[in-house]
Length: 595
Image 1 (tube, rainbow, N blue to C red):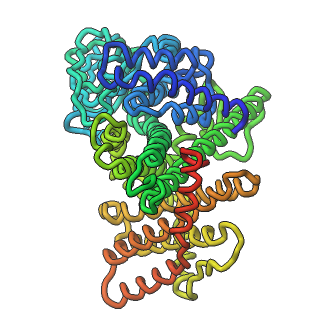
Image 2: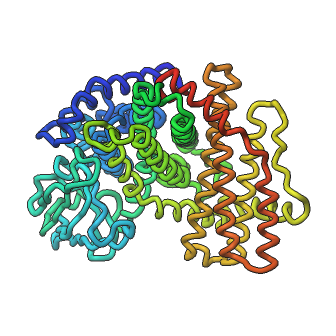
Image 3: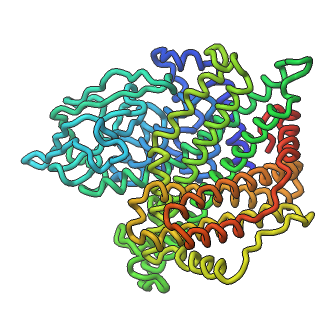
C-alpha cells in the first residue's frame, strides 16, 4: 500500500467508527432516512464515487483503493450491503456499458448518492437460473419506447432507489438490460421483505406493468444483457468477499475483548486453550481471505494498467497510420474508429479473474460464518441474545453464501470455467494434469520432510502437494467423465474446494514471505497463521480428493489411485497447538486481528 491508500483505509475506518456504529440501532430499525443519510455522508467523502470516471463526477480510483474502502467500512452488514450494491452492481453496469448520454444523465447522481441505485435480475422463478427470466420488453411501433412487463425479486436498495438496472427479454428472446427511473409510470415497488439478517437494508420486489421507458434507456446492446449481468457479478463477488473480510475483522476484535473481560474458574477465559484455538482459527482464515482479495484486486489493477498503456500505444500507432504489430485480429476490438486491445475493455479485464472472484466470494463468506459462529461460542448465552452484537453478526453472515450467486453455483463456476478454458487451450491445465499423472505413476511423491529450519519451507512444500492433489483428482475425473464432468456436480464442487485451498494457501504464503523479507514485526504471526492454513489445506484437499477418486473408480484401479493420493499427501504435520497459541497470543495482546 502506498501512503495515499493507507490514508484512504484510515479515513474509511474512522467513518465506520464515527458515523456507522453510532447509528446501528437507527439503521437496523429502518428509521426513515437513516440509511440514506449515512450513505450520503459516505458520498461526501467520495466513497461512493471511487469507481465512477472523473468526467462524470467520480474519482476513477484504482481497484485496491476501492477495495480498502469497502473493507474498512464494513462494520455493519446492513450498511455494507446497501453500500456495496449501490457502488457495485447498481453503478458499474452504467460505467461499463452506458452511452455517454446515459452516463452524463445518471452517474453524477449515483456518485453523490442524490439517487441510490438498485439491480433487478432475480425473479421468483429464476434465481440462480438467471437466463430463465420472464420479464418481457417490447419495442413500440414508433421505436421510441420499450414497454416492460414482469416482476423482479430481492432488490437490495429496492425501497430507496432512484434508478433501477432491470433485465428483461426483448420479445421474450433477447436477454437485455434497461435503465428504469423510479418515477416511471407502470413501475411500482413492493413491500419490504422481513429478513433473517441484514434487517436494516432495504429489500423489495419490483413490479413492471406496461412500464414505458425511452428506447435510449436500453443499456448496452439488445440481446447482450448476459454480458452485463455476469461481468458485473464478478466484481460483485470480489466486493462481497472484501466486505466479509471487514466484517470478520470487526467481529474478531469484539470476540477477543469479550474473552479478556469474561472470567470463569478464577481467570479470564481468554487464557483457556480452546478459546485461544477459536481465536487463532478465525484469525488464520481471515488472514488467507484478506490476502486473496487484495491479491485479486492488485491483479485486476495490473491488468487494467497494461490495457491502458497498450491502448495508448495503439491509438498513437493508429494516428500515425501504422498497423499494430504482434497482436492477432481476435485480440482487437474496434472503438471510436481505433483498434484497441481487448484487454482495454474493463469488463473483459475483470472477466479474466472470474475464477478468483468466485473463489474469494466462497472462501470469505464461509470464513465469516466461522468467525461469527466462534464469536457465539466464545460468548455463550450472551452471544445468543440481541443485547450483544454476536447475535446480529451470526444472522447477517448467512446471506453472504446466497447472494451474488450461491456458494454452490460459484463452486460449479470455479471448476467449470477452468476446465472450459483448459479445453479451449487458453489455460495450460491439461498439460499440468498430464505432468502430474506421469510423475505419480513413475516415482514416489515427495512433499518435504519438514525438518528444515528455513521459514515457510514446509508450507511451500504443502502448497506444492495440494496443487498436485488437485491436478491428480482433476485428471482422474476428466478421464472418467470426459465432457460429462460438468453434470457431476458433487465432483465439480470437490474439485472447486481443492482449487480454493490452493489459492488461499498460496496467497497467504506469498504474503508471509513478503512480510518476512521486509523484516516487519508481524512476520512471526503471519508465518504461524500460514502454518495453520497449510495443515488445514492438505487435510481438506485429501478428503475432497478421496471422494472424487471413490466416485470415479473401483477395485484395483481405485486402490492404486488411493495409494498415489496417500503419497501425495505425505507431509509432516505441524504443531498446530503451538502455532495456534502463538497466533492467539498476538491477537490477545493487540485486542484485534494481528496483521
